[in-house]
Image 1 (cartoon, rainbow, N blue to C red):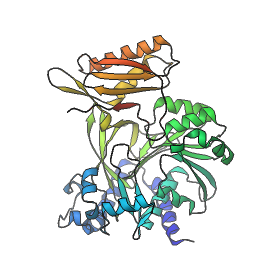
Image 2: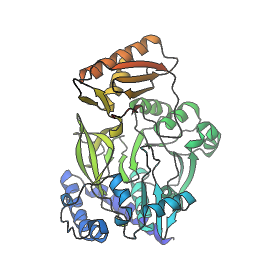
Image 3: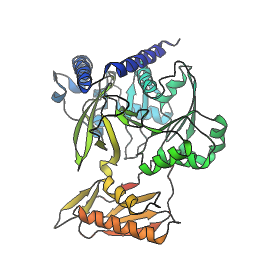
Image 4: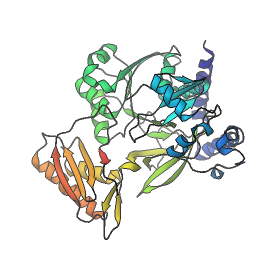
Length: 422
């Protein structure tokens, strides 16, 4: 057996045991406190960025973001790997710098995020992921299809366990390029963005038993369509360059991965929050109090699955896509993506897809399917206009356009802000 696989098996069993041991929120808090204490005393103290800080509590650490991390990349990892070195290696197609594995994000927000991890961490991540998604993997083999906007080297480690047949389908080529191939492969498990799951559910003959949505916001419109056609519950995987943050349970509820990550929350507008994440399992590159760009709506209810891990009602989008519309005087009014989404979808049940884009301080474009009846479009325009007025925007102009295409060279963002204040 590959020695690295031992890390995966250990992480798998630890995660499964924790699922049994952590029965209350108090149990989760105690587990995190012990792990964070060790993380602060050993892992954090080893990297130059925190040298001499002597942090004893998580709150003693400064909040960091992507810009800070990239500007001080070599100071956040124990091997001193620099951002230019990592970028050069990625450009060459290399998967390692020295003995560290490297990877990158899809770059939808501009500059791509990158990371470095050890082989042990790569397989530890795998063990946690498999325990949360395919807990029977030690006893049953699975055929997994990954239809993603970039092949993450983390996923490649799964094939090395010998328990999975893993095949990657490149989204950059479009679904038509490999629809026949994925049908012939006949996966029992698929991981793909919601737009791809929906296309496959509507146009292919595959019938996977395990359906996982990742890389994009899972809109209720897509969930309903995919679940109805596949006859399987869609479970979300909340993951980014910065780590694994959550996985949907058998009930379909997204639970934060609080057994491996500590979460703090900042106000995100309305009842939304934005997370600060601390992954206390990573010791090669420290990810502590890292400010994410995501907007979450947390749930105050428990889940029928019995897990005490924090439930997420929905991931609503990103800070980048909070509209900034003209208000009274020179003020700008912030409007979160859920406001636009709910207004459009609730306007007419025939609306099954949409795009809302801010292109000016008072200009919003609503794009709907070309075959949608005119009265449905009119209702959606009126509902969106009314919703924007209600939150304080002064006379926003809503323009209706026709014709929607699902992008495959980037993540789908149904609500998108393209205008920026000067």
